Image 1 (spheres, rainbow, N blue to C red):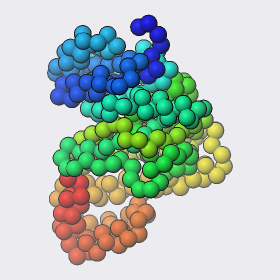
Image 2 (cartoon, rainbow, N blue to C red):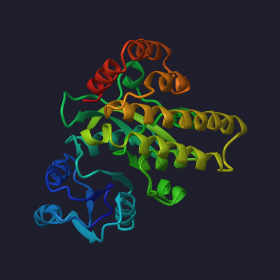
Image 3 (cartoon, one colour):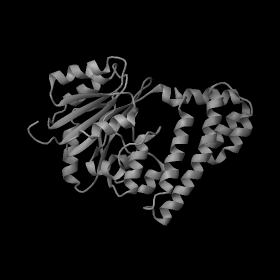
Image 4 (cartoon, rainbow, N blue to C red):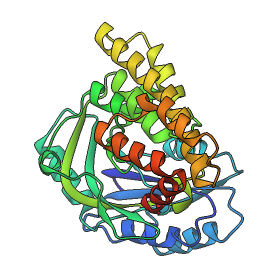
Length: 312
């Protein structure tokens, strides 16, 4: 490559033959062409590597590397080791970018110098159901910078953000966790990375239906571990440490809530009313809790039906 690319797209792929072609095509279709794409095939047993290789033969800005299956975090870290761009972007093998992603983000960077993470808005596209905006409301119609306190309480940074290599140096890369994206951004902010949000809709994030139920407990347990680890970081101020302690307490309550919800969704209604009452602290929205309380007291079966419909 004659000159340093503006952005390195890093894609970890495992058994993604049905989607990787569209993902790569969304990069090939960028209106600005100073980029490279590094695909790490993480030991796929389907046609992922072959599909990706076919694209690389058409455009030498796309490269495909293979490794034994070691997980998404390992694959992303391996891709980062080969990245040469001024900025990096981690793009999952089933997500896509709008054609103007690079151009729009580059223009935004030029207008907002000095940040480490440049996120954007995106379409959230469930496997079944209608797409909607990832972040809605008037607040997200304008640029904004998330604080560490806000990120502690809610994951609000899209994976497909532009980041400087400094962010990776600060964090040491991704850790092998259920919620590794959130962990990566949160640790980066604790260590001094500065974030800014571009309100432009520049990507499509696809959510797997399977992740909505089977992984609810694992996700809650992962958030607890992440926040417990952050609580041990010396960079926190006293006020941030107090907030993080409160978040950890909420995480512990949420794990019990997820266990209750998983049981309900699997058709186990034993002790449902008592479990719902015991998990009050895991429902921050009082109105929603009250509505759920009415349902579960009237009929745990009805509560389960309504909950399942919301997850579909």
